[in-house]
Amino acid sequence: MNDPIQMILYFAAIILVIWAQTKVKGVYEHYSRVQSEKHITGAQVARRILDSHGLHHVEVQMSQNGVLSDHFDPRTNVVNLSPKVYNEDSIASVAVAAHEVGHAIQFAENYSFIGIRNKLLPVAIVSGNLGWFVIIIGLISNIMPIFYLGLAMLAMIALFQLVTLPVEFDASGRALAILRNDGYLSEDEGADAKSMLRAAALTYVAALLATLMQILRLVLMSQRGSRRR
Ligand SMILES: [Zn+2]
Image 1 (tube, helix red, strand yellow):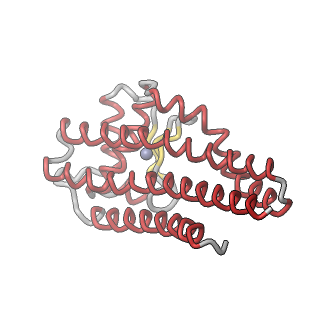
Image 2: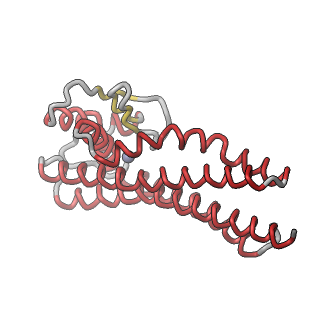
């Protein structure tokens, strides 16, 4: 990797992802210290929004995973909230809880991008586990079809990350509308919640850009290799 452009792409991809993750952690820390005026916890918000949308069968549980591990599991119909989000009444807790419920509503309404995302999920998981391994095998053995297979797997990851974006933005959009319209948050608090969720969405954008940079780097690498031969 002595080509400077390849090197820049490699490190830019890593720095971008670390920057986005640091940023969302910082914003989360900030808004987890700002109490909501209604003093309502993430768990309470989640339960009330689910009930008001007729989703009584969807459970809200406290997971023992770390910060920002919150997620909705469509297989078990459980909104999993990390301990702080579940128990605390901060703007961050309320925003994250409502966002995860947004995913539950998407599933209930068969939101189009959720369907596409779920179809891509198994391929994305296999590609995520094996993609880089296949690429390295291709590079070491110098068998280009193997290398291109690995590259195609990375492209599948990028496609999955791309389809994830509208899903995430839509969940946040739904969450913010509900939080404001149903009086969970005031106008000002709604703006804070928006900042919180926007920072969270940034990590998904960064992940996609990082994958695209890695793909570009590998394409450049393969062209350089073929020129040498
Ligand atoms: Zn989400």
